[in-house]
Length: 621
Image 1: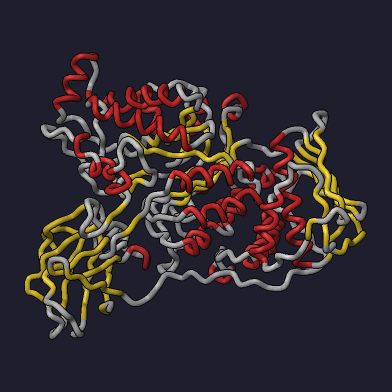
Image 2: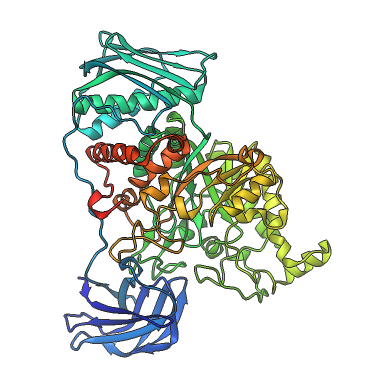
């Protein structure tokens, strides 16, 4: 049974003050400790009612001044530096314990996550998103047929069937040789990537390359879904070419784990809106989601966290064992599903920082004499692997080999972000390396990434990394750069001749809140990101023509510190992901925001019919 509590959270001149109150209630054991996750670490000298005895990342363990058996209320207060102005900032994953006896503690109130409710779909209204370059509609209205005849083997019939099943229209648009003809033709001399024509005589898709076929097929899927729900739509023809070749979505499955099934369902939606890269963030301080044949202890240890695990609770996962590791078959199936949808899966192995989970699974990678003192952004002092150790080199290269067998795409993301200052400075191995190379220990970062770039290239793949992968300018210009803290790093990389994917938090981080309201979930370290901020973004603004040519595309990122379920992920994605889909396609460069907002509203209704829990407009977009 869960215990009830209340929290009084107040701002102070330099931070916050929290008072927790657990009223008298039935308690089966005398609790001696209180544990919880908290975004900003508390000050150990500003606790009343207990004392801090352990802190790992955002997880705190407090020894109570007196054992609490529930006969009397329990009050404990603490303070720290930072802002706790949103409900999602509050202490979470709270529990009391005595040894292995534990009880969860619940605070009242929840963040606002009102989902968009499905409404009737108007007849005769065709809405496309992203908006193609050219759309011509006829006054002729076409009634939705009962049967269609997809001719040829290229069509992804299974994709259409999955979408129809989600609509509750499993028997609609039945495949039949007597149905409305749907044909495709490869034409290399097309001016645009594709041309799609829908008339009472049938449906014809002309395309000049594979990307054009997939783009045209996605627009056809949009038409068929609306046709099924509305009953009639105008005859039309449309054509276009995307502005960018890389149109990405990133998902962090480490802070909170998402099973393969919802990810595969999301791929159907990403492809529908012309998004063609899925950046799968698979390793971090708090978990490792890919199995290893060479090191099975990774799946056994690094994939799980909890009070009795090598990794403690984080991000509010509380007293239960939490986590998961994909099987090799699940990964292969997801990669194959993506490929069938024209989506490239980009795996991310985040090194050399953000490696706490790996170090817990493979303690032989820890140098016993390392006296380095550092603290990461996430408050870890033990999350950086040491490239100066031969064991580190062997393990990471073996893992890269294994991952390259699982992920067949051409891109491999090596992370490289947020290596804390001070790492390796107290390492004897790093000092010996630096002396032999006539370098400094800090140079290990750039040199290591250049070595791993070559390891990835040996598999016929191209390395990618967050903007910090350019540390020391050691990687070659062939390495792709993802600019995340702002636009400046991406602009500098493009000017230096690197391929660049722009994903600045101020426009593209969809874990950031939409508004400043305390009830509105999300982070705000880079401000808030509403629909307009997403749609108005121009990835090449401020660049010379030459540098602009190195911008490969744009990517939406969803980190999951405060995103715990598939429904919450969809709430943070939609409708803002629709805005970034237009940015990636280029529609926002010629259209008006009011027109886009109307189309986004139409598609939010269609997504609701598909069972997607997008954000309701009443909360503000």
